[in-house]
Image (cartoon, rainbow, N blue to C red; front, side, top):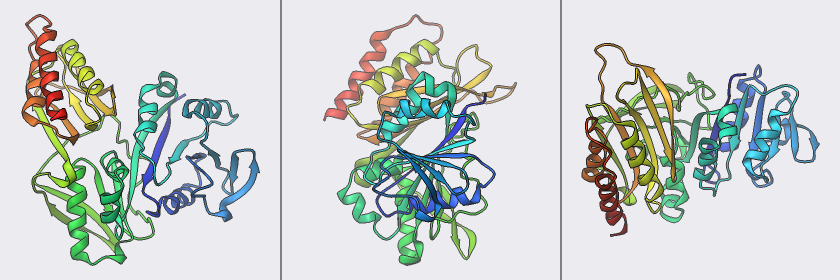
Length: 353
């Protein structure tokens, strides 16, 4: 059986998560979807969609299932594997005040989950009218935005277009690798949100001087957003790359030590690397203190061998991160953990300064 794709929907209270969830269910009548609510009583699916209630399992009008996540996520997902008809897709909606990173870390770090499920995408809803104040008062809003693969700026009719342009720029600085979409009523057209493949081998890391986003306001059109140096609320984005193949043991030691000892400063790592003697590139996804690697695209003659990583977090030093990645390119030298750990210590000093 192919792994069941998972879509995670996050965003602060009132951003439009449940409206988006309803839209996705209605727009995909052919799919058997399982919906997991982090706390069902706080933000529920529209009552008209509910058909029956059995303990904590809600059957929806289109045959989908909704359950309340008040148990360990692993236990909930294992129960879903025991149902007679396996779901086509799983949607997890987090509470508005939640930091989604523990859920993402659970999905990435558990072998049972990894063998039966796969993350298709993380969708973040943003309230165009209230997000500025929320970013000032609620740190979890930063996590929700920086962890998203697809960011929907909702309720754009409530703000002037000039303010919306500024807001889209701010979001682009917080998360330079997410796709952005501006709309009303959580409506997204022409994009299959249940087939983003944001964690697949098709991952690309492109940091340019301009960003495009789709705005849905009667008709879709494209706006360009000019990016400036990232300084918003101490959240920064750092892009490092090398053109030589990496030593797999050195890279694994470096990134594990970095992710395990970052004192909460690294929120997200995303990218791909090329290893010596591998005929495919490796996709890297990191959240909190863990990272996972997956087989990516095949490498053909003439392809670039560049390894490219994006770090999002606080107090990130581009020079030290670049230096650390370059230490992993010394294929012909013996493993020198001292050099790697000295680099990690220098990065830690930066974090603690």
